[in-house]
Image (cartoon, rainbow, N blue to C red):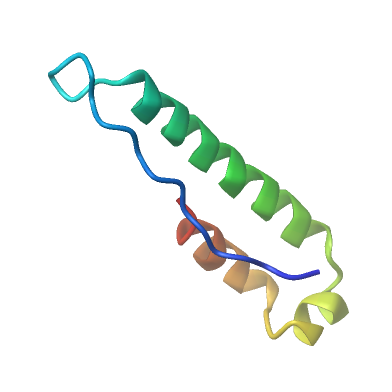
Length: 67
């Protein structure tokens, strides 16, 4: 399993005041990306994590870099 870091572009605010449906969608998508990544990495055994150069303590650091 490989971990790919990526981010989605945020949409410009159409309603002023910093609110946009595109921004809301981007925030929800980023949250879901973090959730899925945390779940999948947590399912790996310690040996599998070691094979990809991680340890269990690295999961939160990896997930916090997404989005």
